[in-house]
Amino acid sequence: MSKILVYTDGGSRGNPGQSALGVYIVNEKKEKLFSTGKRLGHTTNNVAEYSAILEAFFWLMENKSNFSLDTEIYFYMDSLLAYSQLVGLFKIKNAVLRDILFEIRKKEQELGLKITYAHIRREQNKKADEMVNLALDNKL
Image (cartoon, rainbow, N blue to C red; front, side, top):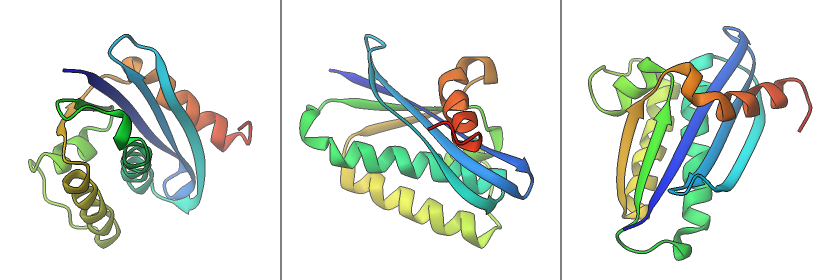
């Protein structure tokens, strides 16, 4: 069994304000497989957090043929709200977030691999956070 570790983050300068997503993906040996940061324009921090998760799924889908059937995907995020909503602890009232979550659920099904979501401290999510800030600073 192999493991893919996906670190996601979203950020907004102002909330709402200029926002970006960050994704950093490694294998179980901590070797980098992918990283990206993308500006999202004027939106909220929560939309940026969810957009980062969806962006990671796009990469996972594009690279699905490289994974064995027993590959497990672990998503790590420092947003307690996004985590709590993803695992069903909190309801999503915002229509935009509901739409993004619907897309995430579709990608989970299409990927067909075991997926686990976990909340981590911000200090443990430095690489994804760095991608957010590089995107916001136009350095990508």
